[in-house]
Image (cartoon, rainbow, N blue to C red; front, side, top):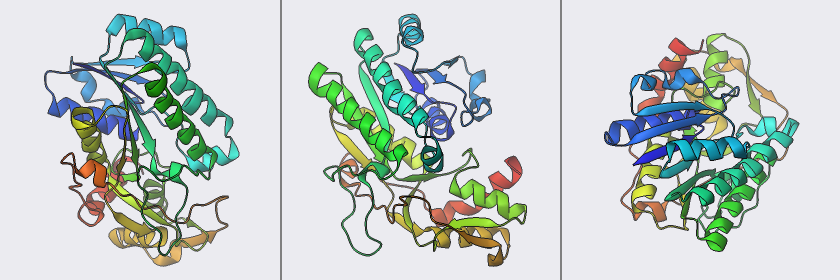
Length: 316
């Protein structure tokens, strides 16, 4: 089996490559990455010593490049992480999110059709569902309407629908996972956890949007990687699977937990004007995925100390 991982030098993509290469010694892998600001080749530096992995720098928006890549390496399975992902960046500059997340996904889907790919797995986000009230409201299921708030979430919802259309129209064998907020090592420091760790170690103000009560459903990145593996092996073609660990944490509580681990004062917290269109709460119902035999194995309480220490050693 030959697996092409788009965005494999990013946070989640690099963890997925590491997980799969450890789990499947007889597979070979292609890491495709445009190496933009969030794609760091150092994330897979150790893996590149393994002859089973081929690193290719390139952009999914380049159809000619993709045709050559597919014809040369003949991948069987595509796991598609490559995307612009930061909500704040999508608010200040949405165009690149449309170009990469929608147009780029469409070009990649076309290449998969032309080259007879056995499975296209699209990695999406719970943000496509929009927001829940802070109190009450049922967790998002795969049947929840798509009501994205940010340009980022709208671009991912658009790509989800595009992927589903390629299954319904052309019979392309696809699956989709919609995951909650990931945490772990190797995350680009613009995201909440590494940003707060970095600023706390510098004893700089920690910017918290609004009142800090917005709630996110958190999952360890390795549990997310395990979930994709389960979907590839046991999931039904054409289906969507929600992925979440059920750890709902208000932003302000998580920031204080980070400060507690570092032994820094809460006075470093600085409340800033709220993000435009800021979703109040995410909550994921993963029961469909759990019927395949998957369940989350890690908790924030058990892993946060080690994650903070990794960023202390590697980012600051």
